[in-house]
Length: 238
Ligand SMILES: [Zn+2]
Ligand SMILES: [Zn+2]
Image (cartoon, rainbow, N blue to C red):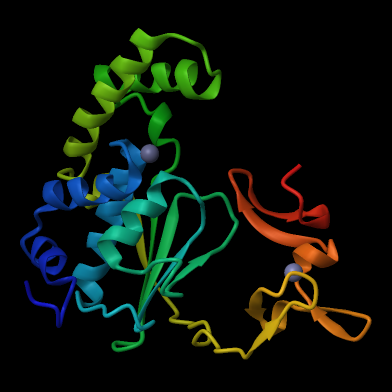
């Protein structure tokens, strides 16, 4: 095990185009196989193949995703840009799209799933079956274990097939101007005057002149929910 580059194995898979193995790694994070995850893995491969595979998670590569669905976990695994290393920017636009930017090459690519893909006449019978099962099992939350089992089975098959499809069948890819976000700033810490927990100074409210965390102060805060970025009134999930 080479500790100097923890992404060596993933880089090897990207270099060889072994997206099936990369999909397995992504699914270990994501919890299941699904077409969205496969699109994310594939999009990451498209981007890094053209921008360079190296990524030490120090913001030299940035992925700007435009949704918070399964796609993003595929992107995080294949690009190494994650919410935790500040190299994943989430724009709440509700599109299955990612822009990957390289500070090294000063280049950027926007990769977006072709529109109406799941309504196309060119879908295979299994894709149509998976689409209809998704509507029943996930969207309408029908309690049908056999339908759920069949959907998962199809998702496994379809996601392994998806990562091997030609990228041009799945995505529109464009070079775009490379506009970088600032490097994640490092802020001082403060102690909450009520709960005593440590927090980023910039997140503290003032209560009687004392720094107080938003939770103790009962202030609104932002949260990423299934619906996207939302303000939580009083910090409550309700
Ligand atoms: Zn998924
Ligand atoms: Zn507190």
